[in-house]
Amino acid sequence: MAGTLKDLIAADVDRVFFELDDFAELHRIEGKEISIVIDNDQLEKMKQGQILGVAESDMLIFAKTSDMPKRKAPGSLLNVDGRELIVDEWTENKGVTQIALRQNRTV
Image (cartoon, rainbow, N blue to C red; front, top):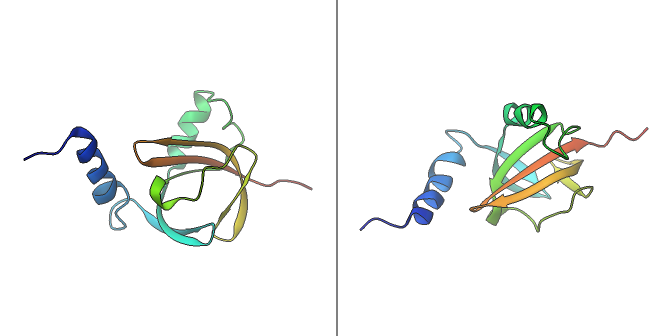
């Protein structure tokens, strides 16, 4: 018996998108090692489309929502591989979290 579309999408997220042999890489987010996908090509497309809030972003990451810490508001800090980055945008959809981040450029 086939699952629902939601079940099939969730299975694809686990088996394909965040599979280390295919797209994902291990990174440490807030001290926890998880599989994420860094997609700076998509970030550039978002910038060209003038998506509000990402014009200054340096990195776009995707992760399973269940692996991520509690959602952070824009302007908050997120520790990625020991670096404190500023959250520009944080969205969650169908079990996938998308976060646009930028480096802290204070002088």
